[in-house]
Length: 166
Length: 231
Figure 1 (tube, rainbow over the protein chains, first blue to last red):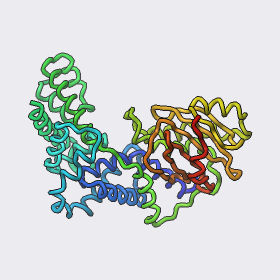
Figure 2 (cartoon, rainbow over the protein chains, first blue to last red; figure 1 turned 120 degrees about the vertical axis):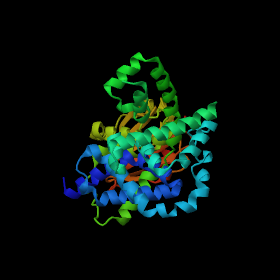
Figure 3 (cartoon, chains in turn blue, purple; figure 1 turned 135 degrees about the horizontal axis):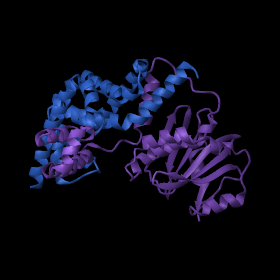
Figure 4 (cartoon, rainbow over the protein chains, first blue to last red; figure 1 turned 60 degrees about the vertical axis):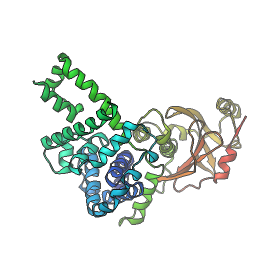
């Protein structure tokens, strides 16, 4: 099999398997569906261009998420202040059909208010299924720090949910 | 191990619990209550975070990369015949992704399908008996109008339901056609993947997928509408 063909198949497989996770992670970072799609596309392009740097299949998901996270920081972070008022519209109940309860709405609001340093590990774990070790690598923190941030993020969200239920 | 340490481990990473924590939970009523509460919370959190994914995400991403990459991909000239059944799965499953109620990761289903199935449907070199095709089609409540050019027909699992999978000789080349009575779409979904191309089109009842090697001409969408007829 030719080198280009091999690269093509490796790439297609990678993106095929993980594109849902890429989009969902992207959506919660961008808080806008079309921006999230653009970010996934740019991530795919960058993944294609640097596929040779991916050595182990086992780390491929974390590798893709790192590309997406870096690309988000590079391209989109500077626009965030303009998006603050739109948060609830952009990832709002009307855009989802997976859960329309008041608990879900409260959770979404709390998620939007979480600081990035807590939200990112949470997204990487719940959406992408990364281990604490992998989250640490993606976010440039230790495994212990990743666990601490996950613990605090979930505690905060759980308190919100309990208040809503109670 | 102390309860507070177990709580920390469980809340932070429930799938990565240490043996000590697992053992502690088995014998501690307080921690078992905490686990029960956390299971409910984790379920809620997962439901909220897992937003629906746009139908055409992969297609759009692929097109974007095609337009912008530096190195040209040369799609295989040779027929990717063995893919035909599989091929179909790409488009199919993608649709199924959105509609499949099982919650299964259809991405994984496609890949597994790719690796474990595919060649068989393309091996048949002769047209199957009309009565055999008729009998099978009737089990789906349809009549197939593909004018004695079907070399393979089988009922195959598609997500949570079944589809009528056929290989059709179009202009002397094998094209896979799958009728899926239980998979609904609102618009036609094109796709292009690893040297394969095709589309999935909504029908009055369910949808139909057509897929083939990217070098092979596809029948028109109008053709698909006429391919099956409800009894």
